[in-house]
Amino acid sequence: MSPEYPLERDQTLNGWLYAATQWGVFLCAPVLYVDVVHTSLCHQLGASRTVANLPTSARILTALAAAIVAWLIPHADKLRLVVAASYGILIPASLAVIAALLLPVGPGIQIAAVVIHGGVAGGAANVGWVFVCEIFARGVAPARRSVVVGLTYTIGPAFALVGSLFSQWILGSSNFGLNFPWNYAIVFATVVPSMATIAIAALRFRVPVVSSTEAREPLAQFLFGGVWRFLRERHFLLLVASHLLLVAAFSAIGNVNLLAKETMGKEPQEVAGYMNALRFLGKILGGFGLGLVMGRKGMRAAALAASLLTCVALGAPLFLRGPMYLSTFLVLGAAELASVYYFNYGMAASPAHLVKRNMSFITLLMAPAALAPAFLGAVADASGLLWSLAVAFVMSAIATCLCLPLPGRREGGY
Image (tube, rainbow, N blue to C red; front, side, top):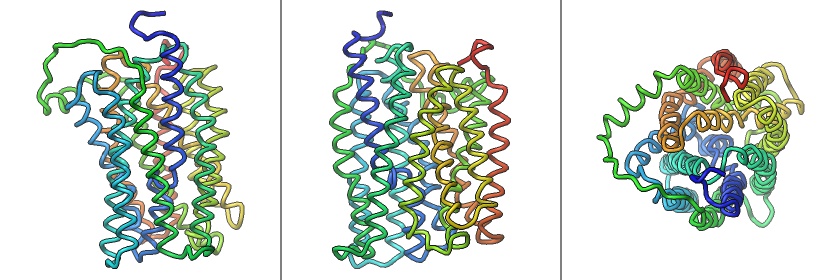
């Protein structure tokens, strides 16, 4: 074993903690993924389709936070604290939404609270994920990583499935007086105990600390010079361009939810939980299948397979009607794992001391995709939901084409 990695028992602990943090996020996925539940809530509060997609825009836009925090905290001795704080900040953000829903305030303030929550969730999740990536790169040897990733993203979606079925029971039920807005308040409240548990667990990571006296470079140089050097490497340029378009395309998931009114004759909130349940069932199947692809063909092959699934998932709603429409979310769930494999490709292609920096650049360069949800919402308002999904499908097809030239295992890639 390479001396830069901790003892085997500590690697095992780090692997389980990595999985546990992601499982906790999966459990709260109906809220933390900032799409179907946020879109349905804004819609019920009277927002237009464009405004209903703003929480998703805010989630993507706050990807900038990961690069800023990576610059502020460059050394490995603070990794655990940053992860704990990132997930911990989601507790007051969720409580703020609950307060806005239950207190006698106007719908404008309520919608603003939901949009702000989307931004906080996006920033916190990106920061937490980037720092967890460096912990994973420093604390688990490469030979062990594929097993951990496969386990994490096969079992993890089962937690999301449980969370989705719970959210559907709450949102679709009037039992125990769970009418609006109490139903949404309870769904957001599930974030509190889960994020508290993750924050505590994150402090138990065992990370080898490498002392460094390197001075922190100026922020502008870190962002602009660092990003320029990063993108000059062809495989990172292709990775970022493909991932950016894929994230932009996938942001149409809110419109897929809203289309239920036209395709199924159901209000979006009536089927949001079922959609999420199928979505995370698809993640379970996708986690297993894409994990096999990664183990046998490499991370590039898994990323390409997931991007192809995104094309299928965004093309299917153009044709499916009735109960079969819900099957779209089964494919969307598997396709949603694309970012996992894009990030793991980037992590494998980076030296350990540059993992946090490179991961933060990938999240930073997702920021232009923040325009996509509002743009696709505007297309839906102007021309209809089907046209917005057609535009998203084209984006996903271009993303898949850009993924094709990435170096694969046979070319000395990943």
